[in-house]
Length: 398
Image (tube, rainbow, N blue to C red; front, side, top):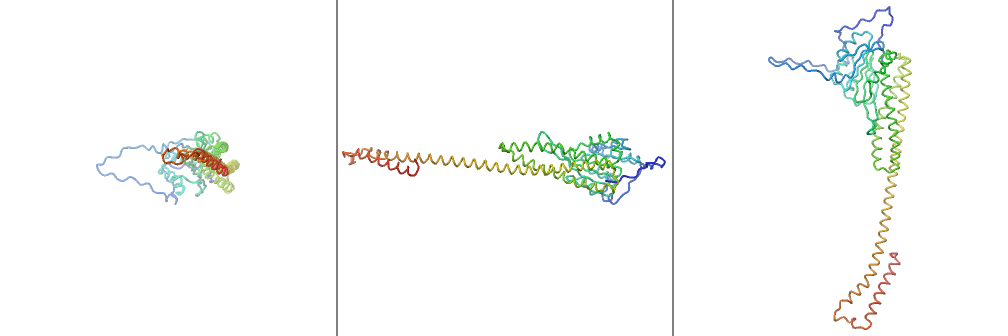
């Protein structure tokens, strides 16, 4: 955890003089790496001066900024400039600045004031980072992936949170709707004994809020998996798509939770080195336990979804085999019927052919005047029909 600056606690010792209003922060090698702000060029003679413009970006990006002293809020600056000035005037104060999708100019302003590392500032600008914990001097840079479960579409929405923790400041940069840091701030302000422990306590509260936000997601995913199992054995054709989408969400969820285990163990490894308060140590260990439990549940979900997908593929294959067998049986039965019809058609065709030939009534047909012509024709028809019947019967066509 970052080590806080020494604060005068003895009443007999003189208090540290406040920083003057015209104080210029030191320019470290990190700050010199930031691109300088270019001043506006001179206006040509006779040119109209540009109209005065407000700066709504800062108002829109700064969700809330406050200064605290001994765990109590002492002021709520409206702009970043006011926050810088009032923090300089507070010898034992702490600034907590909350931003939502800030502009590059705001982040460069914060980097210049609080000596933030350019690499961390670049990560905060680009977002889409994996959870990590990095230390730059006496400043911690923490990236967290928050999650929340949306009941209506039954899906998991992820947000990204960047936290800069220094000796006397905490800066949160939020990309996404989750987590609700206003609730974290209210909780800390209701516990001044915890808030007076400094930026480390704020970082703990943010970590705790992010991890607690995983619990509804775990419950929602568990309910989805139960529904999917029912749909799989019910033969719902859309269940494969739902399994795939939920599996992708679990991959993202795993990417959000698994690195947190190592991050929190890294923080706990530095308890002795940075003199972390005993109460905060207990809180962080509790958060680490929750993260470990959540990570294990997510691993279980991924394995369960893989097994469900395998079972669904097996059931689909069995259903397809059943349908193919039914089609084959139907085709076989149809062929048998065609054989019967064809056999009887051939048997009936023989007398029809004989009758047609002798029914042409030509004058020069010798059989017409033969006294045995009719019996011969009837006998020929019978012999042909019986012969065909015997042949078809031996071939199981009839």
